[in-house]
Image (tube, rainbow, N blue to C red):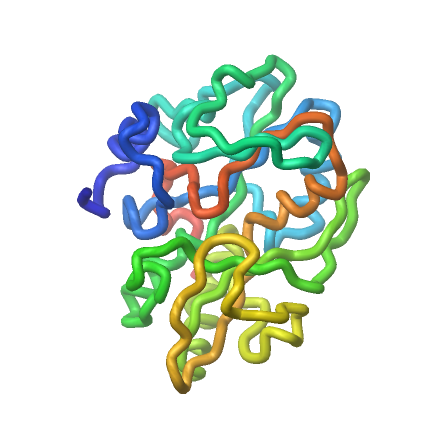
Length: 262
C-alpha cells in the first residue's frame, strides 16, 4: 500500500478492516494521535494529569460532549469508534482484550482525548536526512517503561513511557534541535545514552512495540511517549477505558506543520 495515502482514505481502509497494522510512516505530513477514552466522571482528573505532564501527554483534541464519537475538527467523517487499526479495552485498570472496532462498547458517558504522537515528527527527521530505524526496518517503534515519574493529578499517577530511535551522537543533537519545534507531539528527547539511567534494564526487550537494530557507534535516543496514559490507567483503575494499541494511531487531517513552532 502507498505510504502516502491520504488520511481519509487510510481511515476508510481501517474502518473496513482492510488495514490493521501500525501507522508509522503512513499519510506523511499529517498528525497522528494516541487515544484515551474514559467515563465522564474520570475525565477531569485525566485532563489535569495531561496538563501537568505535557511532554508525554500533549492534548491535541477531545470530544466536545460526552458520548460524541464523530470528531469533525480532527478529520472528515472521522468516527473514533472504528477509525483506529487496533484498540485496547481496560476494565478496572486491567487490559482485557484488543479489538479493531469499539462500536459495541460505546456508551453515552464516554469522553475522548487525543494526544500527540511521536510519529508526527518522524517526517521532519527523515526530511533532514536522519534515519528513523523503525521505519527503515518496517516495525513498530520500541517503547519502554522508565523510572521518570509523572506529576500526579487526582486519581492518576505513574511513570513515563518513552519511545526509542537509535542515532549517531551528532544526529541525536540534530534531532533535539528539530523536535524542539514540535512541543505538541512530545518535543525534544528526554534522554539519550545509557538506558539504565532512566530505569531501562534491557534495551533489546521493549515493553511495547518491537526491538530495532542499534548499530556500532549509535546511541539510543528516547522521547516521551503517548503510551504513558496507559500506565496511569493501570494504576488509577477506572472501571472502563479504551485506548489505542501501541503503534496503532488515529491519523488525522491536521497537517504536521500546524503543530510546529518557529
